[in-house]
Amino acid sequence: MKTNSSFTGRFAVLTIASLIASCAVAAEATHAFTSVDIGDIKAGSTTETLPGKDFEIRGFGRQFGLHTNSDSGRFVYTKLKGDFDITVQVRAVENEGQAFGEVGLLVRKDLTPAGLEVGQFVSNNFFGEQDQYTFIFRLKEGGAIDPWAEAWIPGFFGPGSHGNPGFGYFATGWAMERTRPRPFPYVWLRVIRTGDVYRGLTKEYLDSWRTLGQTTVALGDEVLVGLAISANHHAKSPNGALGDPSIATNVSFRNLTIKQ
Image (cartoon, rainbow, N blue to C red):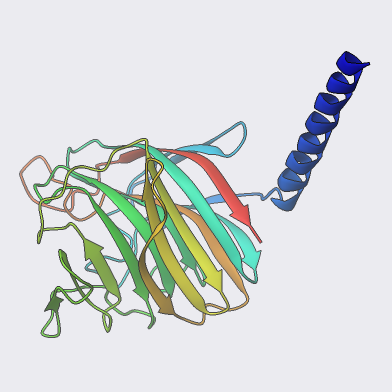
């Protein structure tokens, strides 16, 4: 009797655990994703959707947001209404020009290159400034997301940071401070939407989530949400110039999760 009771108990526990897991999966709806190139960029970008929630993406384009009022890059998105919480693991980032690959989560009002957006990115940077996390936002169509202006304030967001909320840019560990490289594949990015408030978060290893930045912008009830990559403006051309449009960035995303 004791053995049967023990087995029954274990079976009951497993059954409950299975039901909980099933509910958790059901709570995360399946989303169809569309791949597009934003801006006038070189053809040849590819998106491979792996079983589960994994993506292998190759894309061109100079950048999303940083130092420009018009975006160019690869965007793999789905449409969401209302509040959401989206996370992704960045397994690997490779820039073919050994320069600056910018990758991460992006929320957009539309596909207009100069349109409103919010993004939480991480970069793999061989340019000498170390890898970085950036939380960006464009609050005005055609507005530049750029800290290099009269109102640029070193340390505005705390030690080792700089930014200008008026221009919609927030970076840590970039130029101001020589941080260690990002520990791919143990890098997670996250964006939480609550109404018109968007919050960007990062996490490494088993650490707790850390809020990098927050902004309020009216993107509409239904928004475009997904993965974005570019080669960034630091990509070097064969003659040494920056911004070579022929250089691609390759990214492995894992465990993309959307909760609503």
